[in-house]
Length: 102
Image (cartoon, rainbow, N blue to C red; front, side, top):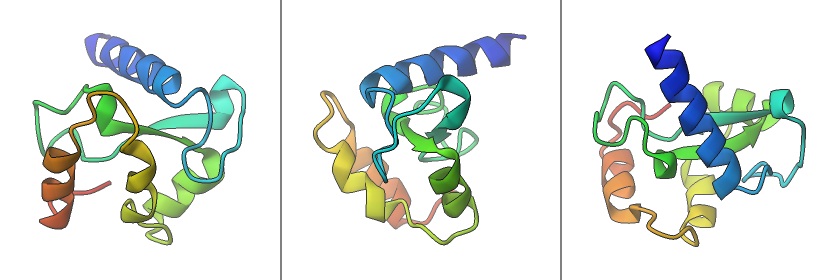
């Protein structure tokens, strides 16, 4: 239950940060049509596990493309630089090192 609540809080905050819109294609949708995706796997870094800036809102289609490796996080990340307090350097360095990117 605790893990589900943590994810709920994470998901809610990511939705607020991304204005309930897919960061890749711009689709606006209902709750079940948009997914809060962890940029860096939770198991990789505990400090970023539930950090909303480690999340990105994606529609079901774009989320599927990420997991099928048909869309790279690097193609999306530039769009996140405008977020307040986005820990770009930390996220980028982990991604560049290819450490367990979802």
